[in-house]
Image (cartoon, rainbow, N blue to C red; front, side):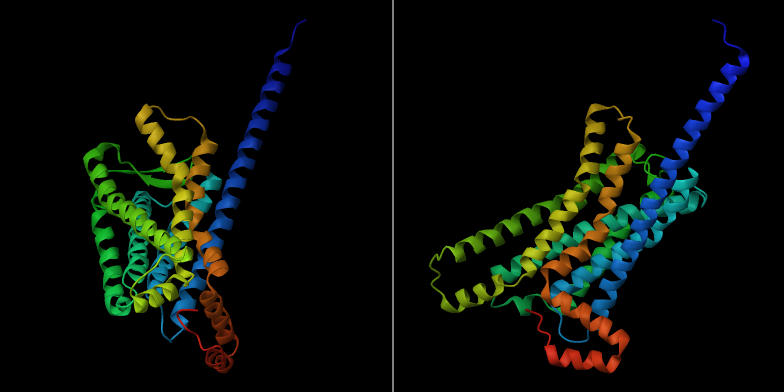
Length: 334
């Protein structure tokens, strides 16, 4: 049976049209997912930032760390996620090489800030349990603010060599995001990973290990000879901030585990996994962590729920907001 050139051409054109339609649908789906994620991250973290800035009463020290995390996530939503929406649909980066390099720099810097901040949160919770009688004199508002300023400045300086032109940033069509190329800076990349991950992971594991050991010890009724210390310790361990902070740390590492595992596998094996959907999912599941924080804080912290309620009452009616603050008598240990 002979097939005419016209019929072959028709089949070919039909196949190309089908492929183009599938490709467009995939791009539209990914762009929609990124757009929804951008809106969710920006709105949720704006609420967190406004909530803490709105309340003028006494704050727990951990609230300043949570505010820092929210600012980092807000910047991620505004300057990283939002700028990936249109390129995800069009399939190309339209904002220029300078912006691409800035986005890649911000990714690494904000991620490092988040990791360091979780380290300081674990240290804060450790001190609250290890030295409950001296905690308020050790962890002051000024000291906390200085640590956070140091964290932002040091992370910005540690990650700045790529910004100065020592390596390139490329737009990845599989993940729809600009990323720095670290292959030609192996020594610097390894040093940065050690400086960021080393102290952070060690501190988090040790500090929360100690906290949960003390929780188990108190619940089991183990004798503590200093009654004043025992009372202060029991009251401190009842603070839900311990479990909430651990949930925040755990969700962060769980969210980024697929991407970290994928990168480690490709580095060790020396081969790149040719699965665009896998790479896309690994990156954006990690970035999704910037939205999960408000859900964890709302579900596990009564104080945060009260502060959010106060924020919306203040927006609706300032007088009612002030009255509500007086009525509920916000206590940082609630």
